[in-house]
Image (cartoon, rainbow, N blue to C red):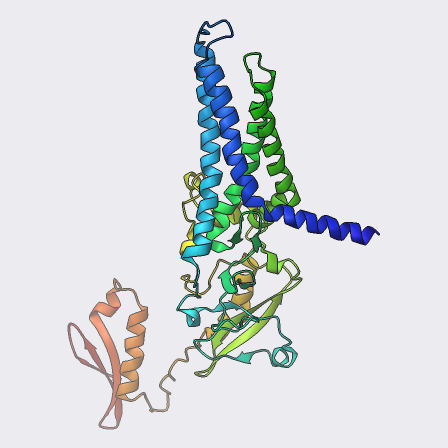
Length: 407
């Protein structure tokens, strides 16, 4: 029967997680009432009358302590609740009809579907239709997919850098919600731990008369922490922030990219497979990709990072790639894009020289390559050859003279 027990536990856990918004709202209402109002305000900042009808003296130390506890609690709850609201609004309202950027044909490095391309890869490259992307949605979305765009079955639409649909917060985790979602992962357990400490302190304080709210606060905090552990929030934070790996890419052991180049007025793609995540830029740079390049933007969940703003607007890619991808592109494609200049033949010693037009073009190219400050080019512009009475004579054309020089 172990499999039945496993199935039952999974079913109960999913049902419990499905009530995630209810537990969050319970935590958001019960904890401030118990800790901030009942303890910090009524017990520390504005003590009520005693059983004998006398007012308790207000202690300045307890008053400031209660004020600090309220401010810290308000800051923590405003951070994770505001991040949750942003995730909800962005998912359900802002990106209901998201489509890839309108400039898909300008990218030189693009992600490719993991298809069987043995025959094409054997030839080294495949034809490419300019303006199209080598990725299609397997669920029938009517557009080509840009890099790291995956399908969300919950909302039946493709989203950039899609990770998963979180039933706990009833929202989708993808490019535009990664930062507020990571704020929620980080700030919510801190708030739960902080609220638990305050509730325990209130239970141990002799001035506390009614202990039921604090017991309820501890239970609500424990539920939140349990849900965080059950839903693997910590693992998700480490995977998204430190390794830059989203859910659909977890089972990938190879990543397929295509390098676009032009060959005889025809665009082609050279397909290459990488055994490392091509978007893993290192822990610190991955962190900046989500939270922002400047350190002071890390503390504001609503401050959009550069990666979100510039997705699809980079000159030759949708998102920044690791250094080994750029090196591979340089080694494979850049030599194909480099042309070789062939110099015109020099005049022979047998009396045959360059005609006037070839000589003029040759000297013009030479003048372009010389420095503007070169004194030789200021005086002499170009040298041409002509026949005069059967002898080769040189004509010097310059700024100062046009003299005929002898042979």
